Length: 610
Image (tube, helix red, strand yellow):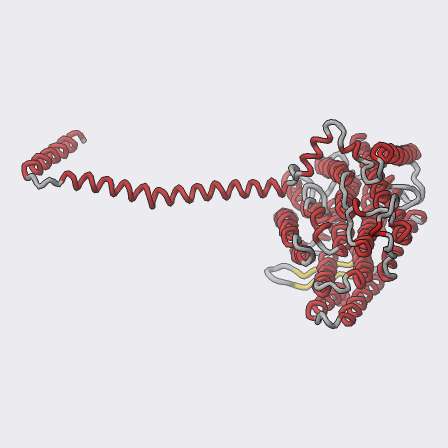
């Protein structure tokens, strides 16, 4: 195959972005049809390129090279990006109909696909950084076109992700310096002192892109303010794929990460903390999209935990969970969009009984909610079991965090499904109908894939995931099929049953599905923590704003003080002294002579003392 074909995944979506941005709003049919065609062509191209191995190295500027590489891992991510891009585009054709910002959204969408493809294909750290930073601009743009609060949320996302990207820049500079090259495929560094610093800086950029704590707080805000297809495209799928892809490249290729190393333990700790804290916040949410956004954060923790174990079973589980999460999380957001489209709200207090009005959406929700909760035989069960296995091998505390996260995940999705699709149907929701077919097809396809990737998990594990590790790391192991550790399976089943019983208890105690988790939220100690969390006390961005305001107040006070010294104090002092000196000018010559003699004597004395 012609090596120049490696440019097509970057060029084709870029053309689509330009066409969308310059299109006239009145030519809706032309905009929608061109968007569909570009997304379809991009998907077909990704399928054609999947089995290809292409490397392209062109001399660039300042001694650098324009280096692209298509191999199994990058081709796999490329195909995933194209698949989700196509499904979100298809869904958006009807969801965005009548929206003033439709052409802008499609423009940003295709520009995002172009930049994401470039970041995946880049085999040069500097080139990858170029595409990576471009995604920061499209992230801002896609959020900013939302509701009246969207610009503030877009600014928040830009600052948080921008700070993490600054760490990535420093990490890239240090990595290239230590390796003596910026070509990614030629970098293989030990985790010594400088190597560990470079690793941490680059890992910050990767986990931030994936949405891990503490770089997460813009995601729940974007869930309410940004167009919903944005949530299904970026926080739910593309950013997870890109962030975990980079993290896998860092840990598998660029640095030598071993079990029981400090960096491995650090990643596992970040993963475990992200799992627990994010899912605890998801449990108390009263909005469909905001609840899903916290789960988008929590699930990243499982991926980081799996990859951080540095053992094959955990890494395979982390990468498999990356794909699975992108599937069920994007579908869950699409079900939320369907509810918003038909009911006009995603507030769980205003929903209820929608399962009878929207049966297909409800079925897709049930499948993907079961998948994310780790219910067998859906795909999330198998990826979580692999992560559990790797976590338990590294330490019981990490396994405990993962299993507690699964309990809270199941509890929150029981609450969400009960509140939105079951229970009493309000008068406003009686006439609601199912969404159009163009919105149903993406949900059905993704939900069906969750079933297929579970029942036939050998397909993704053997042919997509395990080749990323290579035979040297796998050492002949095959992690597909039903889990071999039946103890872990038994614990998972017990935890899921416990979550169901907890939900029944909560419903009986509170009288509604919406408040089924209130007994956890109001538990001793937790109630105070939750109160602080809802006031954004633990949000690093809010602390950053407070520090910025304090610094601004101090700077203002210093500035005013300097102005007062120059404009008031020095003027008044000079004026006062001049009045005193003027008062001494009495016109008495005898007095002047006396003062002159006194002055001369002082000069004489000082001269001899010196």
